[in-house]
Amino acid sequence: MSRPCPNSECLTRNLNPNLGRIFRKGIYFRRSDGQRIQRYLCGVCRKSFSSASFGPCFRQKKRKLNHRLKLLLVSGVSQRRAAIILGVNRKTVVRKFRFLAHQARLKQEAFLSEFSKTPLSEVQFDDLETSEHSKCKPLSVALAVEPNTRKILGFSVSSMPAKGLLAHTARRKYGPRKDNRPIGWNSLFHSLKPVVHSQSSWLSDENPHYPSHLKRHFPQATHRTVKGARGCIAGQGELKKLAFDPLFSLNHTCAMLRANLNRLFRRTWCTTKSQTGLIDHLSIDVDYHNRVLTPSGPTLGGQFKSI
Ligand SMILES: [Zn+2]
Image 1: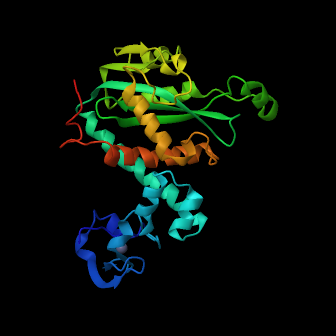
Image 2: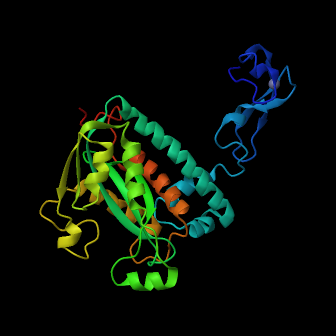
Image 3: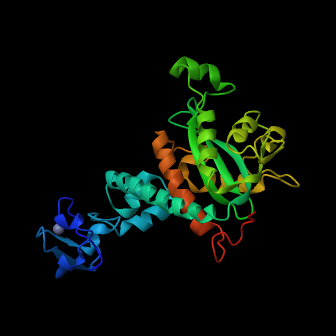
């Protein structure tokens, strides 16, 4: 038995896991998936536990639905429709949605930690715009992508005031709205510090705010900007019909997000209700995108250009 007693008040915890005091105590078949689970008894505190006590799905009654729900959520299905398809209550879907997001963030952390030894040399970044509840309350998703494999390195969600024709209506209906994009950019660049080389090359569009924020976190990096295609060709979404798009990897990734997350569809009936919901949904998709949708090398860093 390699597990210490999970009881926080048990004396074995102070005795540097005293493994000899844990005994096997029968088995049971888990109701939700019929798996055979070993039970254990702690000889010191006389409490019992099982091999399932340490799993991330501990105490879940419908663990079999986790994977299917994840596939639905990253395939353009809404949470309500997922509840109908899986035959469960909407509240179950919400709980599992948050659980899956948490698990996805842990996996993404582990994925990124692979690059701490061989930091990346190239990054593309840009903002993707969406909204919460109404078009009058826009949100900005800052996104960083590795251009050779299109792996998503990180993102941050921040509120921004409405622009253009909606600006006046938005102020009248909802009052002034804070522009938190600088906070978002700073947190994104800060989170990338351990995985991106200090002398890396960055590519973005000509947003005038980017250079100063990037300089603060990566003073030795080279930052190249290209004319935003959004400015020269309107109405073509993320994938523009250009002869050559220098920001192709990033725009392609944004297009995939827009195709896979129903809340990011254009002209959709489904909207983000809270920033936390959007962050959770993006976390689930980022993990799926990096592990399943984009090619992976023999080692995760195998296909990356590292300095
Ligand atoms: Zn114990």
